[in-house]
Image 1 (cartoon, rainbow, N blue to C red):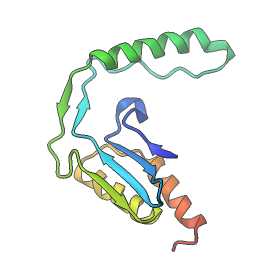
Image 2 (tube, one colour):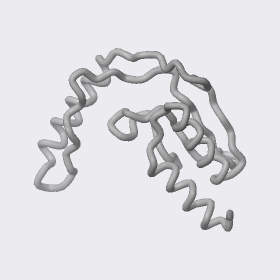
Image 3 (spheres, rainbow, N blue to C red):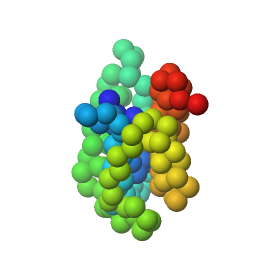
Amino acid sequence: MSYCRFSSNQYACDVYVYAGIGGGFVTHVARQRFVFEPPLPPPVAFDEGNIDAFVRRSAEVQSRVDQAPREPIDLPHAGETFDDPDATACAKRLCNLRALGYRVPQDAIDALNEEAAADGAP
């Protein structure tokens, strides 16, 4: 299960986080970011009334991703991978990466904290 991917938050995520096969949690930190000028079009809800608009936007975003330049991330840990033993440690790592300037979705941190609480972590 992944908690976030580089494509999360409209490609504004600098980490890919998932539960490791052998236990624990893996965090890959991006080396570079997409540069979208102009910004990506706003999201379109996927429901019966918006299928065509959703498909058009998805195609536009994919085309923009395929052509977007990338800029290097000049922060400590760019391009590194981390293995954390539990959800609490992984959530703390994500908070630390965010404090350094990485784009980390709050919902990934929240999901890890909820998982830790369900597992009985303080």
